[in-house]
Length: 267
Ligand SMILES: [Zn+2]
Image 1 (cartoon, rainbow, N blue to C red):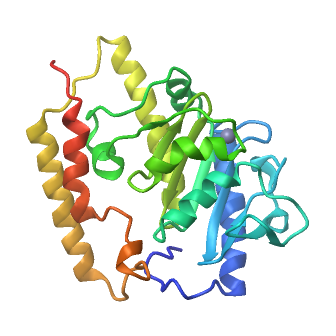
Image 2: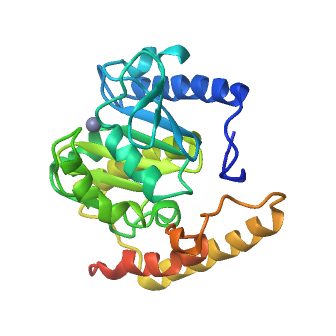
């Protein structure tokens, strides 16, 4: 269930929290089965309300989680419910939640092909696949920081405001969304795009879309945005004050997409 249209002041009811616990366990199994994580790697979280986050515990295999294993923390990372400890990598989740009122779920994993790009020090910033351009724009590379420390967040901080998927140098990938399904699907998209880019490079290099084509995608994306606005029956989640408004809306995609093609190379 999407929280995108709920008011930020609304807390998750016990039933909704139960649903989120089940959903985190399900997505954890998907990540494990698709080998986006092995052993105890990766972590997932969902925002319960503006102050509380439901997260996976430290040292647990994501393929074998039970709903009661999850812990609730506040925005400083302190456990407010549950017997386990949150993953040490929860700091990057908190960075998203503190910086982006629109973010209600975060997914972190080490999918092998995307992590290969991150290990090679390569961002995924070329305009190659329309669906990736429209949903994610550039997928930047955050510079390396020791996992589980604020050092990692130093490299991430300048990127979280404008990016829903980020490669972590020599580490993995982090994605966010208005709900867990969206955050997880973005992880799948990043891994799939990485595989396509690897194959394209083996075949002589990707054919980068020209600027005019990217501009058409931006225009289509904006029309979609207008149509979505018209269909809404409840107001979308908005920041509490104009100064908090940090998330690029669809209508602001055009400049980002422009930026995506700034690195065009001849073909
Ligand atoms: Zn990690």
